[in-house]
Image 1: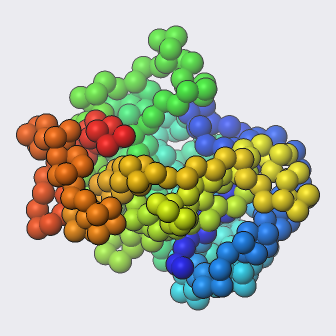
Image 2: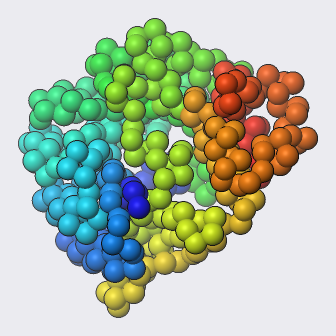
Length: 381
């Protein structure tokens, strides 16, 4: 069984006001204690799996995994190879906050086996970065990218966020141009989402968060597609663009429903069997997570066995995120029914509205459909 590995490092220097990911600024343990728990969980999980496991990607996410000691990253890479037969040429990604890396640390991460970086730049506008609660400025972002190149990383991605409070289309275009000027191999461009429970959520409810309207957000998305295409970046997913040969193999696995195992506090996993698949997650609390592992227990907080209808919906709204779309033949093979039999009536309006199209046996979002993707996906739930 081919699968991907995700290792979650939940600790941050400070919690950003828009972030709903499982992250904490006040660690209840030392980095070594958490790292040892990750390694112990990997050992526990391996005992539960068949022998034919081979990992094709490894992703160190967070939180801020670039805060971890590079030696821990090396131990995690080695354990992945030993326990899960991580391929020698596997894509091994480290998420980096530009304010937490130096040339020396990146040299050490490179020596530990990391071969791809994802830099959470978010913006090159210092005012916007301040409002986002980021610990870096535009200068630090550029320095981090230069340090990555100096350390020998030839696969570097930059993340940007649009539709920020007070952001103009001109500012967004400038962010795109400054990112392209660095010539990264990959760019991810996400629209800001206001998540319940975050400080931004409460500010919006109080009318204190001046967000761009829907038309302005759509214009920002279209600008990203135009600017990046003109500079040689191919769009392969709703929010992701890459030079030829540099698509994210790890994230592509998610969209193609490749099995993956997540380790760490709040990490999620997906296996294709039994039945139509199962998803499970570990406790979000690092303290609770550490306690489970210390007792020799797999830290599972929630488990959901997918029904046939669940699996169909996931197949569609994950696969339709990609520009290639989903194979209608594959849908029929997996579920013994055609797309039209299951969704034909409910999705007819999406075709007539120009949001979905069918071509050469594939179903995919149109350019307009990518902008309004959430309106499409809700039809499959």
